[in-house]
Amino acid sequence: MKTKIVKATDQNIKKATKEIMAGNLVAFPTETVYGLGANALNENAIKKIFIAKGRPQDNPLIMHISKANDIYKYVTNVPKKVEKLINKYWPGPLTIILKKKKIVPNIITAGLNSVAIRIPQNKIALELISKSNCPIAAPSANTSGKPSPTTAKHVYEDLNTKISTIIDGGPCSIGLESTVIDFTTRIPTLLRPGAITKEMIEKIIGKINLSKSNAKKIKSPGMKYNHYKPKAEVILIKTKIVKRFITEISEKNKVLCILNSKTKINIKNKITYKNDKHLGQNLFAWFRDADSKKFNIIIVEATKETKLGVAIMNRLKKASNVIIE
Ligand code: AMP
Ligand code: MG
Image (cartoon, rainbow, N blue to C red):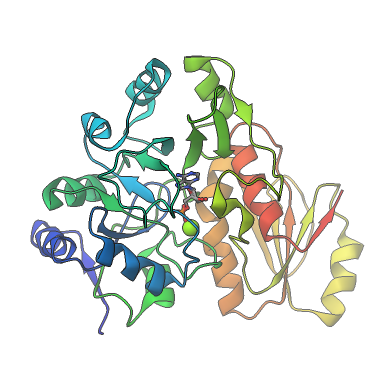
């Protein structure tokens, strides 16, 4: 199949909605990362997502809707706390998990009795969903296990020949996957940190729990898989960056350093980040770029684990082979 990257014109979005309605896949931009979309109520269409990505069948997908009221069609009960949260943060990078109704196919939830739902905050995504007249199941539009795609080109690198259309909406404004919060537990549980932080959620609904990564009892099946990994080995450094360390590693390796711009070290292959927003937006793109330039080690200077830094460090810890504390 020939894969086309198309501009987000009205005509192309209309064509894309036809693909979705016909049970085919379309990649589209959201504010978090690019999504690989299919009609969420069509089992055959959803199967195509798992095949194109090489995604394990037990890793459930997020269902994307365009109007908050649509949530009542797909879940058995919407607690007051959820209403408050979605009033505040939808459309936005916040995914809510609730008990599903029968209409939601088991394949999208990987057999779980709960479903993950969000409204993305991206004009193109919203238009595609509302015009397709169905909810859209969309995981990140990458090959399973690779860093999530934050540009149309990243999607093309992974899914060329596997899908017909990629709608190009430019680079994603956030660059990290959505926050996932589970409301099937008595106290809501944060399963994946994202740009809507724990503090932002607690400000609206009070105390929530953090999920413990307990391998035996994983609540979010996706959490057990190795996401976000480039081919290069990632070394995450939490202490002061020492030039001698980098120089020594560089004698035998092709090393790229991703450092805080305040760290003044004169070395060859260096990318600096200004703040967490800048790092979050670009982290996956820099990983992919490092792989394409055949770096075999990426040294990343850790950021503070507060606010957006929590989500960034979550991805960095999953990507890294070595953490120096
Ligand atoms: P992705 O679409 O690649 O961003 O992954 C979606 C994430 O949401 C994965 O980590 C899934 O395991 C998680 N998820 C989706 N649906 C559920 C659900 N019903 N219960 C728990 N986690 C879910
Ligand atoms: Mg993903």
